[in-house]
Length: 153
Image (cartoon, rainbow, N blue to C red; front, side, top):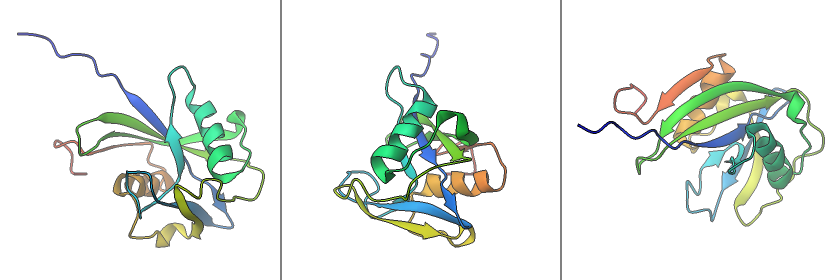
């Protein structure tokens, strides 16, 4: 019997940006994944890059805002498995402070930035992001998504 191989995990970061009791969401387009659905400002963590550095870069590149790594609170981690069987961690950071006015700096991939009340999130949202965001806002630090042994499928 061979032992299972250790997983090579990838991670993505999501920014929970709040202003006046509202959350910033982006409407995805032309990405090849979840187009037409809302998501948070987000991106993959590159090889050799810290998660907080990735969050800072995504905030600047996607929404034109400045975030400092020291001002990021990790509010949720979700271990997810996508439809293709790939697993990764989604790290959800809430900046205590951020500067600038969010603007759409990637119009080729984003149809617009919109603000939503936490209790009125759009139905057309990436399901695992909606799941994790709802738990993060409730103070739940960890969840799993897409594994057959959980009720989250």
